[in-house]
Image (cartoon, rainbow, N blue to C red):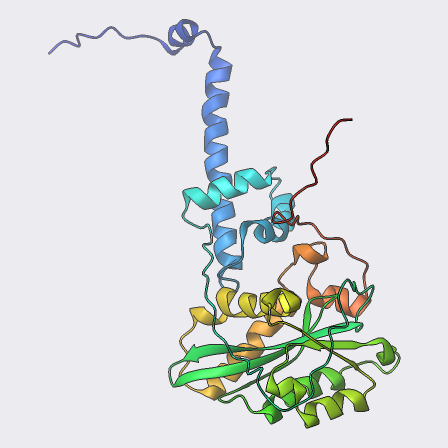
Length: 302
């Protein structure tokens, strides 16, 4: 059977389209190169997310920079988000709220000392908080002490109850690693007004180490926003992806996760450095994010 359609040479086809043969070949070479680069990037994202399963696109973009330079790939952040979207790799945030604080108790409550206070170095402001985590045997509770300037978790402890003695262990860890020459008299410890933080033993340990005591005043999470944020990162980006059967497994996993958080996870709030980098070197940093919830002032032309 004869072919009813006339054969058209590539040269003539290009002329009909108004392009050169060279441009035709370059286009398909370019598309093939983009596809190859995308496969490389997706593979590297999977490697990073092996341990950081919920790391967002902005942080991935920073961590990918050495990889992109090594493979001579030029890529902006928007293209990375397009690649993540096309490969179903964008992260969806989960919202939840559970109360772990008892504000109604007989202990003394302290004033909020950090209104408008911005630390200028490490070990000037610590924040403490307690969060829950559901494992196979039930709920366990994690206490965190975080250095605000560096965002480093410097003390933590996990147990199956909310006893004050277990909250003190997180503080003891933080104090144990506190440098002798850090000027601890300027250090402020900020927390909510829960029983654990107002208890005689907890307050006694803070005072014995010349640490000033600051507490929230009205129960608003924004009064201890950084501590709340750390809780969310550790649980939503790491812990909630694992099935843990007992407390011993939970403690081992928590230790691993905190090491990943402190040593590998970049923060836009500290110039996309890691908490360890900032804490160990007391680096001056710059925020790389904007607060989109603060309305810009309206300027009226006079």
